[in-house]
Every structure is written in C-alpha cells, then in structure tokens.
Length: 79
Image 1: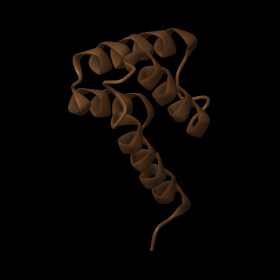
Image 2: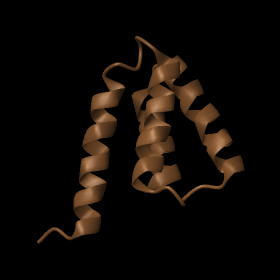
Image 3: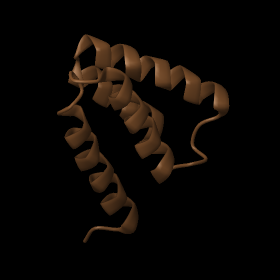
C-alpha cells in the first residue's frame, strides 16, 4: 500500500522526468522549474543559501545536458 509520502515522491519523480525532456531547449528554465517543483512539494527543506547553491548546481547540470546528474542533484536537495 502506498502512503501519502510515497505517492508524493513518485509524483515528484514523474514530474522531474517530464521536465528533463525539455532540458536541452532551455537549461535555465529547466533548472528554475525544478527548483519550483521541489520547493512546492517541500517548501521548508532548504535554507536560502542552500536554495542558491542547488539552483546553480541544477543549472550547471542542465547546461551540460546530463540528466542523471540533474536527477541526483534534485534528489539530494529534496528527497
């Protein structure tokens, strides 16, 4: 049986995969959307300083087109 937390995590990962499909078209938008996605699900997870650091890490990974790196960074920040 799936609990509410597990359902939230699965939904977040599905939304992450959908966002990664458009990563190469606009890396800046992708990184920004991923931060908004994570902060929408877990608004109190990161401090302001951590938000800026993860935003930059996500942007760098999106610019390199490395979806695995983006996924790992997102999961480290929010899951």
